[in-house]
Image (tube, rainbow, N blue to C red):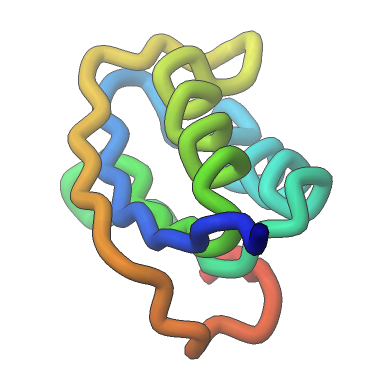
Length: 93
């Protein structure tokens, strides 16, 4: 049986910029063999899209609830949907 694939669009607020959140996110996503992207948003949040096997996507969303050691995450909002297959790798934008 093939693993279900899904996509998650995540917004993380708190002290999440300037604490290696994007690079840590990229490393973890690559470790989980996920595609997508992560970027800082103008309002001070971090935004990311993860796509791949559901188990890995869910693990990445859980990781975002803590973030890297120097982060202080206040809130994570996530929209889940079907995988689109339009993201070839994982990048920091």
